[in-house]
Each structure stands twice: as C-alpha cells, then as structure tokens.
Length: 309
Image (cartoon, rainbow, N blue to C red; front, side, top):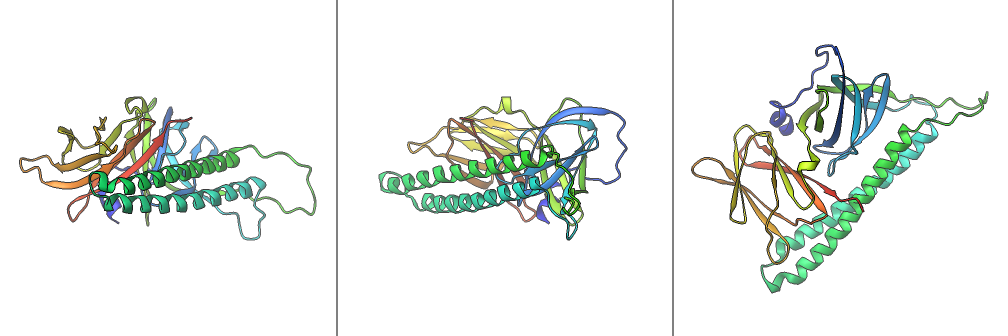
C-alpha cells in the first residue's frame, strides 16, 4: 500500500491506454520492489517473452521491438490436468535453486549486518568486521548463484521446443497463457530501468532512464523518487538529489573500507532523515532508490551489480 502511494506520481499503469500507432526499439532492465516475480512476461509482437524480475538485482538486459505501449503480464499455469512441457519443468527446477540461493543470501546478509552493527570503531571491532566481510562474500556468491539460475530458467523458457514424433497416447503439453497485469509507454531508442510494484489492480511500473555507462564500477548511484529534493552528505562532500535525476558518487571510505552516508532535507535546517553504512567495492556498483514515507522519513531500496569475471 505504501509503495503504491509513493509511486503514484511517476508510474504509468493504465489498461486500455492510447492504442499503439508506431513501432519502437529500446532496451530495459527490470527490478521488483518486493518479492521477485518469477512468472512474468512481456509481449513483443505476437510472442510472450518470459522475464524473471528479481528484487535484489536487475534482470538481464532486454531488447524490445514493438508498439510504444509495452505490455507486461503473468504466464498463467497450464490448466488442471495438463502436462507441463519439458522446458517448464526444467525452468521450475532452476527457479527452485534460485529460491534456495535467495534464502541463503538473506541469511548471510542479515548475520553480516548484525555483526557490523555490533562492531565498535577501531581495533576492538576488527574481528567482527572481518567476520562480516567473510559473510558478505558468501552472500555475494549466493546472489550470483540465484542470478545464474534465474537466467538459465529464462533461457530454458525462451528456447524453441524440440519437435518430436506425435504419440496418440501422450498428453499434450499446455502452453502458458499470458494474463495482462500492466503496461507502460516508452520512447524509441531509450534505455530504461523499470520498477515493478504490485497491488490489487495490477503492476505499477515506473520507467527511469538507465545509463550503465554513466555508472561505472566502484561507484554508488542514488535515484530519488520523491517530490522534494534531498541533500546527501558523504566524506565532507554534499550533493543535491533532485527528484528523478540520478546522482553518481565515488565515496571515500574509512580504514576498514566502509563509507558513511547521510540523507537530509534540502532546506535550511538540513534535518537528518536516514543514514547508510555501505561497503563499496571496485568491481561492484550499487543503485539506491529513495522514496518518502507517508509518516515521514525515507525508504531506501538497493540493487547491486558485480563486474562479470
């Protein structure tokens, strides 16, 4: 409910919007606000293209060609009694691996956060910080395993099924049905980051300009989705976060590799709203999506990318 209110001014989800009049080409990556959407798809021409939408990292880049209204939906399960195809069975197995990796990632990350919070500054907390770094390395391995499994499931679903000789007694494999959940208008030649929030009416989809080339590894990207500007303080520097405009920062770190970040109001009082303690890496980059809570304060969602080996 909160996310629906926060995104209402910058989302486009309308069934029966203006009919497409031209064909466009663009690229996009997707991210879910809450739980991963594992049975999502989008329409490209007459095809329904399966798309796994993660919640902790971005989906694989998608090259879209079709109408300006990009339609998203779920792939409904086959009818009761129908036999799932071999590709659906293989994809389901990969998704089960991804879910187990997600659970392991959450466990390692939570334990690392607890150790980091309990570590005092200076040599006294060094042992806990080393343990936390070791746990975060394990968490990163699980995140990579989950991403690989979801990518493999997507490839499996998208692969053209092999032709086989018909058998009179064999059940017919059912094709998943596309159930519309939301749509958004995009422009030709754009590169987008699409954010998905679900409510009882469907998916609210926010489109942001996505420029990975302007977000190099080793940096942090902040995108403020609220209405009022914010002030970011880090290592003696200040940045103004305007609504909808990405700000990229290469932070200064302490002797243990951590960086402290303050998010404040942009007025004269500079009231503190949120503090972050992050561990930037030269072979990784992080995106922080900031929204304003109705009761005050800020909500920050992060997504991390690691450089391909």
